[in-house]
Length: 507
Picture 1 (tube, rainbow, N blue to C red):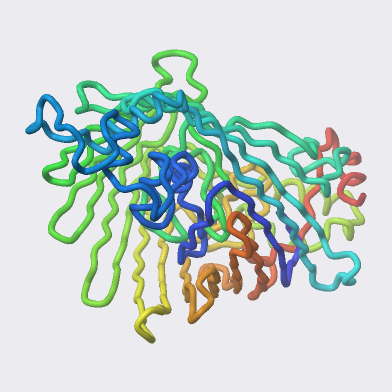
Picture 2 (picture 1 turned 60 degrees about the vertical axis):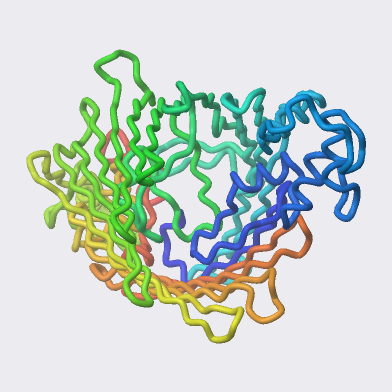
């Protein structure tokens, strides 16, 4: 994170994947990975004929269905073939024929991946253009997807992360250094069913709760917040045991989850429950998550159509929150440039301000509420313009921008969640006219508590079947010292004594 006053940023992303990129009209547009894997696994075309042709060995316009079935299951190659011994038996289902075809080919493993190349430049107010900051957080994901039967699936996905712009010798905010290259495990899970009634997924897996576009306070199980302005959700999976019980006749789903992250004893085991129900046209979900030494978390979300609007909302209620909060006594807004400190007394004052005055809110009930709506304007028979608005009330945030530096130093600064009031407005233009592979997005986001914000324009185009180019330009506006216009530089280490502190603050 650049802690100085960034006035604009721009970047470009090249995304290479084994399946066509799915254009999603959101600020966090992400490919539908499940559909992409299915298409890659089965060679899917755009229609049923192409898909069956890929599955059973025919090309569109090729042999007829009887010929194909004869090739797969035996018999003559015409519609007048000799009838079977059981002429009134039901023909094999598509699923059965698929499994027979895969079994004959011994083809149960799908291998694929995604390559993400990213380059971003950030220009800082008052800095010459040649000193603009560059970053290139690129990565490659590779997955193995095994389906030996229709009731068993094993999946693993690894990530190789690389950023050549990182200086391995530089000391960060916490005193640690960074590496240009690292290898991470994204997902590693096994999925199976019990009597085709209960479905179990065990291992490191991705999960996301909530209906919000920008904010998801009910996304309890992920240890980090989603970067809502990113083209992809790049967070890694979470180690869980998830038990899913669907009620297909009602369209309801129930989930019981055991959270295994950093669990060394049974008493550290975390638990979560979620119920998703259909009530008329409304989709409603209730969720909760509990764990020793963690906050009590209760959540609810809803999405439904009202006239021409798609309305969504979610609310979280937190209790026993152990994260430190900061009040007016922790105000560090007077710190504009640490290199300008010239005396020991000021250095001591700066260190005290950065340390902050934590406030204990463990006995408080802390609400977080998101409400938004979308409106789709059909400006011709085939093209749409989508408008979206969202508001976020965050009682865990602050109205005091001067407490941001103590939050940073204490490791509790979370972008998009540090203020008390937020709002976002966006417009999405998907595949306009003959530009079927192009999406435009204009997003405005504001922290109303400190009167800062950003405006971002996204451009996405699929230039080849498996290659998508994403580009953006963003500008930061508002009062200096707010969330999006932080100016102060933080000392990289915590000195042992006051005179050493003065030395570090000045250098």
